[in-house]
Amino acid sequence: MNSVKPCIIVLTAPSGSGKSSVAKELLDAFPGMHFSVSATTRARRNHEVHGVHYHFLTQEQFDQELLDGLLLESEEVYPGCWYGTLLSEIDNSSAAAPVLLDIDVKGALNVKSQYGRDAFIVFIKPPPLAELERRLRSRGTETESSLATRLDRATEEMGYAHRFDTVIVNDILETAVTDATASIGAFLESHQNQ
Ligand code: 5GP
Image (cartoon, rainbow, N blue to C red; front, side, top):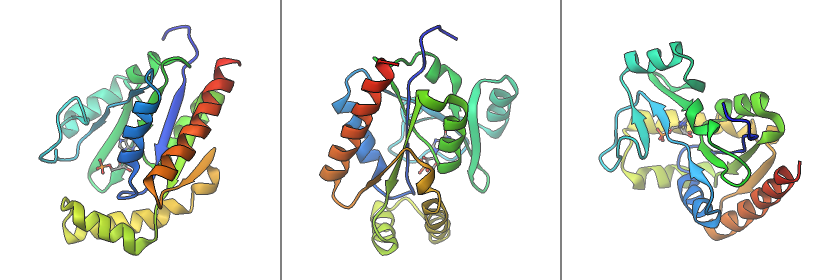
């Protein structure tokens, strides 16, 4: 652990809410920010690169990381699919070099409970379910069954929005990015002065 105070920004949103687009824009808006690459046991999608989008691990490898105490938090986000944040991603963060996490609701609340004022958790509120379903279908990465699981989970996750530091509505990407940039910018400034 280094002696600099960690600085963690967490983006959480149901699958298909446009969260990755918001994350990409935030990384451009804050040049010192870096993206936390999670570990996961889910299968790699065609366009995904090991070590860039995720560290794709077998269940045995993931369990070993857990046993070795290398994960800050972990969740079985979908049945049989584990995801976890590596502690090493947070250790190198600071107000000048914040780390951006794209993790689920429970993971976000877990990070907040461990890091308090060093973490800022942002909920990206998705468009209505019908639009969410349309986006997920057009992405073409889901089967009917995994689509249904993701939509069920989206409904469940929306019930947690009020526990977040801020809620950003993602109807229009530009507006969502402007709103997220403003509230994260304010957090970073106050964190720097703490
Ligand atoms: P996907 O399979 O679409 O890449 O991600 C599925 C869900 O897992 C998303 O909600 C994503 O934010 C979440 N997720 C990704 N990495 C982590 C992680 O390290 N921890 C937790 N708790 N959730 C994660």
